[in-house]
Length: 78
Image (tube, rainbow, N blue to C red; front, top):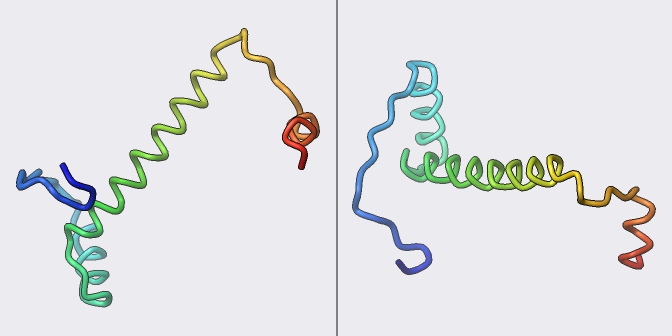
C-alpha cells in the first residue's frame, strides 16, 4: 500500500457518549473528519506501544549493560 493510502476496510469503534461528544466538537472546530482524529490517535498509540515494548524488552534483558546519561553523552560525543 502506498504511503498516505488508506484501506477501504471499515472498523467499527464504540465510543462513550463523552468521547463522542468531544470528538464531534473537535471535528466541528477544526473542520476535520472523525476518521482523521481516530487515525491520528491510533497512530500515536501504536508508536508509543511499540516504544514501550522495546523498553520493556531491554529492561527484562539482564545481559544489556546499563549506562548513565553521562556515559551515554561521552560515547555519543555530545
